[in-house]
Length: 203
Image (cartoon, rainbow, N blue to C red):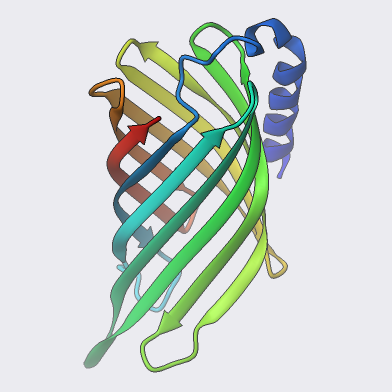
Protein backbone atom coordinates (compact mmCIF):
# COMPACT_ATOMS: atom_id res chain seq x y z
CA UNK A 1 0.00 0.00 0.00
CA UNK A 2 2.92 2.35 0.75
CA UNK A 3 4.29 1.69 -2.75
CA UNK A 4 0.92 2.65 -4.23
CA UNK A 5 0.72 5.89 -2.23
CA UNK A 6 4.24 6.90 -3.30
CA UNK A 7 3.46 6.11 -6.96
CA UNK A 8 0.22 8.06 -6.94
CA UNK A 9 1.91 11.02 -5.25
CA UNK A 10 4.66 11.08 -7.90
CA UNK A 11 2.07 10.92 -10.68
CA UNK A 12 0.08 13.80 -9.19
CA UNK A 13 3.22 15.90 -8.74
CA UNK A 14 4.21 15.28 -12.37
CA UNK A 15 0.72 16.34 -13.48
CA UNK A 16 1.13 19.70 -11.76
CA UNK A 17 4.74 20.32 -12.81
CA UNK A 18 4.66 19.94 -16.59
CA UNK A 19 1.59 21.85 -17.77
CA UNK A 20 3.32 23.27 -20.82
CA UNK A 21 4.28 19.85 -22.12
CA UNK A 22 0.78 18.52 -21.46
CA UNK A 23 -0.70 21.00 -23.89
CA UNK A 24 1.19 19.41 -26.77
CA UNK A 25 -0.20 16.48 -28.74
CA UNK A 26 1.32 13.30 -27.28
CA UNK A 27 3.62 11.26 -29.50
CA UNK A 28 2.54 8.23 -27.45
CA UNK A 29 -0.86 6.92 -28.57
CA UNK A 30 -3.68 7.04 -26.01
CA UNK A 31 -6.45 6.22 -28.51
CA UNK A 32 -6.36 2.57 -29.53
CA UNK A 33 -7.91 -0.88 -29.35
CA UNK A 34 -5.90 -4.05 -28.83
CA UNK A 35 -6.56 -7.78 -28.68
CA UNK A 36 -4.43 -10.82 -28.04
CA UNK A 37 -3.56 -14.00 -26.19
CA UNK A 38 -3.34 -14.11 -22.38
CA UNK A 39 -1.96 -16.76 -20.01
CA UNK A 40 -1.93 -16.72 -16.20
CA UNK A 41 0.07 -18.61 -13.59
CA UNK A 42 -1.86 -18.81 -10.32
CA UNK A 43 -0.39 -20.40 -7.18
CA UNK A 44 -1.74 -20.80 -3.64
CA UNK A 45 -4.58 -23.02 -4.90
CA UNK A 46 -5.43 -26.74 -4.74
CA UNK A 47 -3.19 -27.18 -7.75
CA UNK A 48 0.08 -25.25 -7.78
CA UNK A 49 0.27 -25.68 -11.56
CA UNK A 50 -2.94 -23.89 -12.50
CA UNK A 51 -2.17 -22.03 -15.72
CA UNK A 52 -5.37 -20.91 -17.46
CA UNK A 53 -5.19 -19.16 -20.81
CA UNK A 54 -7.53 -17.25 -23.08
CA UNK A 55 -7.77 -13.80 -24.58
CA UNK A 56 -7.66 -10.13 -23.65
CA UNK A 57 -9.25 -7.04 -25.25
CA UNK A 58 -8.28 -3.45 -24.34
CA UNK A 59 -9.35 0.00 -25.45
CA UNK A 60 -8.48 3.61 -24.69
CA UNK A 61 -9.70 6.96 -26.02
CA UNK A 62 -8.08 10.36 -25.37
CA UNK A 63 -10.94 12.87 -25.49
CA UNK A 64 -8.98 15.96 -24.37
CA UNK A 65 -5.31 16.91 -24.18
CA UNK A 66 -4.91 15.02 -20.91
CA UNK A 67 -8.04 13.00 -20.01
CA UNK A 68 -8.73 9.52 -21.36
CA UNK A 69 -11.19 6.67 -20.88
CA UNK A 70 -10.03 3.04 -20.89
CA UNK A 71 -11.55 -0.41 -20.58
CA UNK A 72 -10.22 -3.98 -20.50
CA UNK A 73 -11.69 -7.46 -20.60
CA UNK A 74 -9.81 -10.70 -19.96
CA UNK A 75 -11.27 -14.22 -20.15
CA UNK A 76 -9.29 -17.31 -19.13
CA UNK A 77 -10.07 -20.98 -18.59
CA UNK A 78 -8.15 -24.04 -17.47
CA UNK A 79 -8.38 -27.41 -15.81
CA UNK A 80 -7.52 -27.87 -12.14
CA UNK A 81 -6.11 -31.41 -11.67
CA UNK A 82 -6.84 -33.42 -8.54
CA UNK A 83 -5.15 -36.65 -7.43
CA UNK A 84 -6.80 -39.79 -8.85
CA UNK A 85 -9.78 -37.92 -10.38
CA UNK A 86 -10.47 -35.92 -13.47
CA UNK A 87 -9.72 -32.21 -13.42
CA UNK A 88 -12.38 -29.54 -13.08
CA UNK A 89 -12.68 -26.68 -15.55
CA UNK A 90 -12.39 -23.24 -13.98
CA UNK A 91 -13.40 -20.13 -15.94
CA UNK A 92 -12.14 -16.68 -14.95
CA UNK A 93 -13.02 -13.27 -16.35
CA UNK A 94 -12.32 -9.68 -15.43
CA UNK A 95 -13.75 -6.40 -16.72
CA UNK A 96 -12.50 -2.93 -15.82
CA UNK A 97 -13.55 0.59 -16.84
CA UNK A 98 -11.31 3.51 -15.94
CA UNK A 99 -10.84 7.26 -16.32
CA UNK A 100 -7.32 8.59 -16.34
CA UNK A 101 -5.06 11.59 -16.79
CA UNK A 102 -1.91 11.56 -18.92
CA UNK A 103 0.83 14.12 -18.51
CA UNK A 104 3.91 14.70 -20.66
CA UNK A 105 6.81 14.57 -18.21
CA UNK A 106 9.39 14.96 -20.99
CA UNK A 107 9.28 14.92 -24.78
CA UNK A 108 9.37 11.09 -24.78
CA UNK A 109 7.74 10.20 -21.44
CA UNK A 110 4.08 10.33 -20.43
CA UNK A 111 3.13 9.85 -16.78
CA UNK A 112 -0.41 8.77 -15.96
CA UNK A 113 -2.84 8.25 -13.11
CA UNK A 114 -6.14 6.38 -13.42
CA UNK A 115 -8.93 4.88 -11.36
CA UNK A 116 -12.20 3.08 -11.91
CA UNK A 117 -14.46 0.05 -11.55
CA UNK A 118 -13.52 -3.62 -11.71
CA UNK A 119 -15.63 -6.80 -11.82
CA UNK A 120 -14.24 -10.33 -11.56
CA UNK A 121 -16.06 -13.62 -12.14
CA UNK A 122 -14.92 -17.15 -11.33
CA UNK A 123 -16.89 -20.31 -12.01
CA UNK A 124 -16.37 -24.08 -11.99
CA UNK A 125 -18.31 -26.06 -14.59
CA UNK A 126 -21.58 -27.25 -13.08
CA UNK A 127 -21.48 -24.79 -10.19
CA UNK A 128 -22.67 -21.24 -9.64
CA UNK A 129 -20.35 -18.38 -10.67
CA UNK A 130 -18.89 -16.14 -7.99
CA UNK A 131 -18.72 -12.40 -8.74
CA UNK A 132 -16.83 -9.62 -7.01
CA UNK A 133 -17.05 -5.87 -7.62
CA UNK A 134 -14.65 -3.18 -6.50
CA UNK A 135 -12.39 -0.35 -7.52
CA UNK A 136 -8.87 0.01 -8.81
CA UNK A 137 -6.25 2.73 -9.06
CA UNK A 138 -2.96 2.89 -10.90
CA UNK A 139 -0.04 5.16 -11.65
CA UNK A 140 2.93 4.82 -13.96
CA UNK A 141 4.66 6.01 -17.11
CA UNK A 142 5.09 5.19 -20.79
CA UNK A 143 8.49 5.88 -22.36
CA UNK A 144 9.23 6.12 -26.09
CA UNK A 145 12.81 4.80 -25.94
CA UNK A 146 13.19 4.76 -29.73
CA UNK A 147 11.04 5.87 -32.68
CA UNK A 148 9.48 2.39 -32.92
CA UNK A 149 9.87 1.07 -29.36
CA UNK A 150 7.90 1.98 -26.23
CA UNK A 151 8.32 0.68 -22.67
CA UNK A 152 5.99 1.18 -19.72
CA UNK A 153 5.73 0.46 -16.00
CA UNK A 154 2.97 0.97 -13.45
CA UNK A 155 1.73 0.02 -10.01
CA UNK A 156 -1.93 -1.08 -9.90
CA UNK A 157 -4.06 -1.46 -6.77
CA UNK A 158 -7.24 -3.57 -6.71
CA UNK A 159 -9.82 -3.65 -3.90
CA UNK A 160 -12.88 -5.90 -4.16
CA UNK A 161 -15.06 -7.60 -1.54
CA UNK A 162 -12.87 -6.47 1.37
CA UNK A 163 -9.68 -7.91 -0.14
CA UNK A 164 -6.92 -5.94 -1.84
CA UNK A 165 -4.00 -6.70 -4.13
CA UNK A 166 -1.17 -4.63 -5.58
CA UNK A 167 0.29 -5.61 -8.96
CA UNK A 168 3.41 -4.49 -10.80
CA UNK A 169 2.68 -3.92 -14.49
CA UNK A 170 5.37 -3.97 -17.22
CA UNK A 171 4.66 -3.39 -20.90
CA UNK A 172 6.36 -3.02 -24.27
CA UNK A 173 5.23 -1.98 -27.75
CA UNK A 174 6.91 -2.25 -31.13
CA UNK A 175 5.58 0.06 -33.84
CA UNK A 176 4.94 -1.70 -37.15
CA UNK A 177 3.20 1.19 -38.93
CA UNK A 178 1.52 4.43 -37.87
CA UNK A 179 -1.64 2.38 -37.30
CA UNK A 180 -0.42 -0.99 -35.97
CA UNK A 181 1.76 -2.03 -33.01
CA UNK A 182 2.71 -5.32 -31.42
CA UNK A 183 2.44 -5.37 -27.63
CA UNK A 184 3.48 -7.52 -24.67
CA UNK A 185 2.33 -7.02 -21.08
CA UNK A 186 3.32 -8.72 -17.81
CA UNK A 187 1.45 -8.16 -14.55
CA UNK A 188 2.49 -9.91 -11.35
CA UNK A 189 2.23 -10.14 -7.59
CA UNK A 190 3.20 -12.90 -5.15
CA UNK A 191 0.54 -15.46 -6.17
CA UNK A 192 -0.65 -14.38 -9.62
CA UNK A 193 1.12 -13.63 -12.89
CA UNK A 194 -0.50 -12.66 -16.19
CA UNK A 195 1.30 -12.49 -19.53
CA UNK A 196 -0.47 -11.13 -22.60
CA UNK A 197 0.60 -10.33 -26.14
CA UNK A 198 -1.18 -9.20 -29.27
CA UNK A 199 -1.84 -6.45 -31.81
CA UNK A 200 -2.72 -2.77 -31.26
CA UNK A 201 -4.77 -0.64 -33.67
CA UNK A 202 -4.07 3.08 -33.13
CA UNK A 203 -6.52 5.76 -34.27
